[in-house]
Image 1 (cartoon, one colour):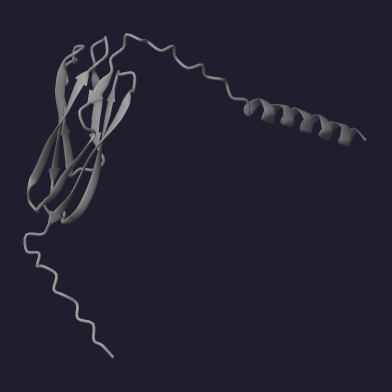
Image 2 (tube, one colour):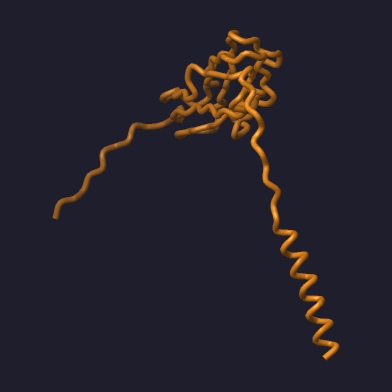
Length: 152
């Protein structure tokens, strides 16, 4: 009898710890600051089209701070090492424009590609995604010969 009572008490304590561990605190959304920076890009996707392998394809994404506070780009990163972003390190004042330069190294990478560039900042929309895409032709690519299907 004593053994059952002891096991019941241990089980009750364990159950109460398990229920406490599963509670999650509620997170209140931060109050929106109407005066904060806001980034606005002219375009968020650029298609290079088709070009020869070995070309360093470059595009400048133009943007403007349409907010009321200075815009600070905290990090700009590409989805792979073949794409190199360059961005302004100084704050962008309200109303000011700037560019993020994306350079795609096509050497040794024939075929179609789609690469993303993640832009993190202090803007109201803290993360933006830019995309570059295109098709790299191998320098010694031969035009496809027609396929002949024998008739029976």
